[in-house]
Image 1 (cartoon, rainbow, N blue to C red):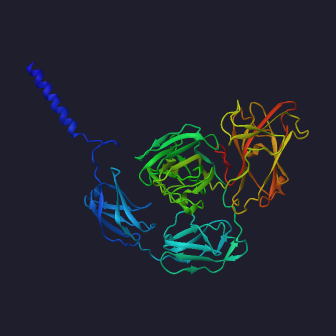
Image 2: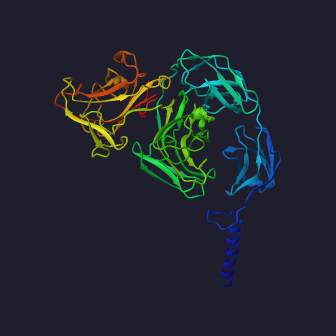
Image 3: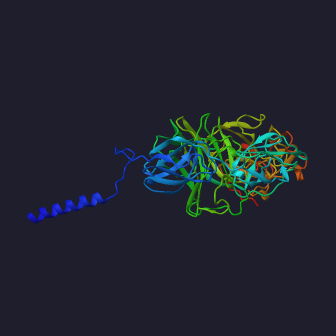
Length: 550
């Protein structure tokens, strides 16, 4: 008995000792007063960008983030009562905020007012391609305050470096053959004006590679919650094309943690963008009149980076996104500043966070997250929500037997019996406003969703008076009859060449009529036919992620 008591006591002592040696884990609901890191002194409140400054205070060794608003400082070194940080080159005046590993936040009472080195252009562009970005080269090009073309302020295009910066020429009212001037105003220093710069016709520089679907939210995906401590919710909802993903919070959490991540590693194979020309992240977004934020994330060589959506890309973003409805967006990944884009990527994804939505309602929904080779530049020709003539019926989405997703609430449909090439079974036509020749200078694709049900089907496409047929050369196995889709909605993405062949009279730079005519084509006479279509869109890159362009 005595020996048993001794054994029990020894086991209890060992258990207590073992437990006391374990690292304590604190949950969000812990009532322990976790330490706050504080700033008591800033060594230099008016440093030059790029300088290193010392922050003195308490619990500095556990600080994980130092920032003024969205502008993050690089941590050089740190100990218990001080840390050395590097002032970012892109920054505005404001108080320094620090966050530690316990998610405790502290904002200094004193403002930091950075100083900038003068920007100086040493090489002006010899020409500007109408509608395309141009590059200024020189010293401290990332410290430019404003650039004007033809007297009109233009936006930065992508991420600038100290040696060069790109600017958009869209909306400057410059015409091919004219001379224009560029004015550069630095944050510090003298304004510069270029000599006359000739405006030239934009050139086609590459053929788009395969579009990659990262997440359409109809196929299985893996949402991973982040480190945000404030309440939020996410769910799949009806989007433009099948399901979309929404994230919402009663009060945006600013820069205090990530709500949600969605990544794709291509079934473990990663993505190789080595042969791509201008990889863009492209997606549909809707903040329903409010504000929300999402950003791209890329993992390469085991290291993950995230970058931001700002006004540099022409959408009016400011570390937050605002739309009144669904909008297509495309952002140049290299211009955003990712260190690896044209190479082997382990994963590509998006993450949701408060960003500059701080203390106000947060809402954002996304759909069709893709990598496109170049911007999408979409022009919706016919969304099939309303009739375009009386011969094609407008039917509600979700009709029995059709699988996959179409776009919106309705689609267009026709059923018939093939008469081969004897006459037209049914026509739909609509008008399309002139397409911007500069925006579509790198190529023009026509895309639409197709479903032939359990039958066969065919139509020919009329663009401005020129007929276009669907044949095997376009990559889908069509032969003046569509390859059966077996009840599934599928994309057709066809690159067209205005002014050539049957489209010799087609000039998309002018308003034109677009028409589809259902015919039997090469479908044997008296064979039952069905054609369902939706979402006719012009783009500069294919929408079909299953098409491998030549």
